[in-house]
Image (cartoon, rainbow, N blue to C red; front, side, top):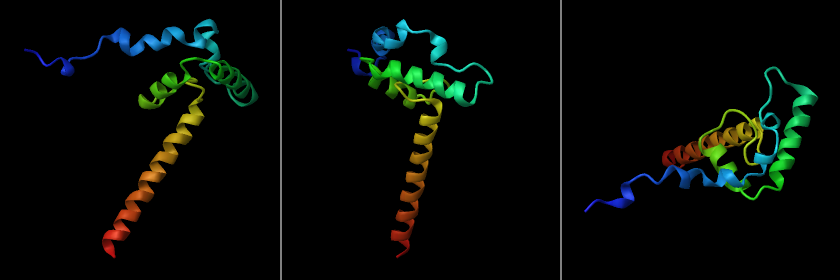
Amino acid sequence: MAELSRLPVPVADVWEWQYQGACREADPQLFFHPEGERGPARHKRDAAAVAVCAGCPVMQQCREHGLSVREPYGVWGGLTEEDREAMYLAERKERREARKSAQLREAS
């Protein structure tokens, strides 16, 4: 008998949450910056996208997706590209500090 737990789940089960996203009713360009957009224009667009996410019933699933696959572009789950990069940086710093602490404990 086949071991069913090792089989991949149906793709629809993995992505079903996207059908409930508040972003489906919004302009997709709101969530992804045009090339060269900077400064106040980018901040304003990002803020509008984050506001759409704030009332989204699947914001957490979207955020988890954006972080787990390290989406390089766009607003995902209320997090901008810069928000996610700051989180990744903090994660790396935490790991680095944990390694240093472990090395100091081993040395003493």
